[in-house]
Length: 254
Image (tube, rainbow, N blue to C red; front, side, top):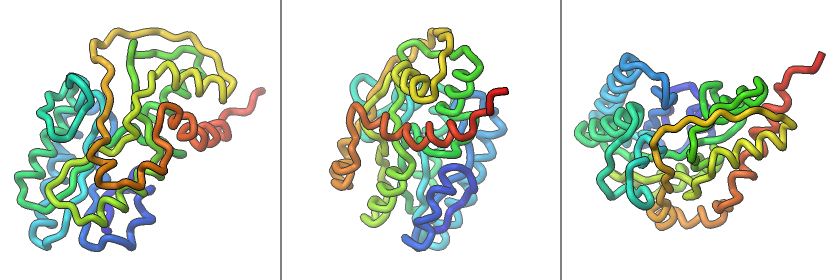
């Protein structure tokens, strides 16, 4: 597998570089759900156009990473499934939805994966968990009232990707998530307890309701996920290596 990109997901995909030679993984582009400019969106669309054209000409499959977060499924009634119409509710969600359609119309063989919130050591500082830790250390955390996130360990994601690519899927869209929405306040409680931090919480009203990501299709395609421990308490195990890594980065008290 050829990997386009050098960021968090691309680095974690490197163990698969010697497998699935018919596939190109596009693990580059926008990974910041808020604060991203139209110019960033345009650059990712242009990159997808180039990579998809190369795959179409060579007969290779393009592995594209979309989102299963609230920007995609936040307005859906019931679990967010791949086979239902969705109406994106954030600029990031609308951008990813448009890229999915761009890829479908490109004529390239492809597999679209809508990802939950990936967790692992050395995550980019702008992503959710590093942001929460930074705010905890600063003493004030801004929390979207009622917000929840489906956390999934990046190593589990890579294992799922390996299984999915082995199935030789074409023109499919699959949610890759744990299927359990964890309240952000519970995530904060866990981080604060493990890291020994206390902070004041400022609540922000956003109007986006909590949603659950359906993993029915994933479980039917990859029965091995039944052994990955997905469940209501899965997030605590997932946060273990992350909190260990950020604890070691904490400044030494004077």
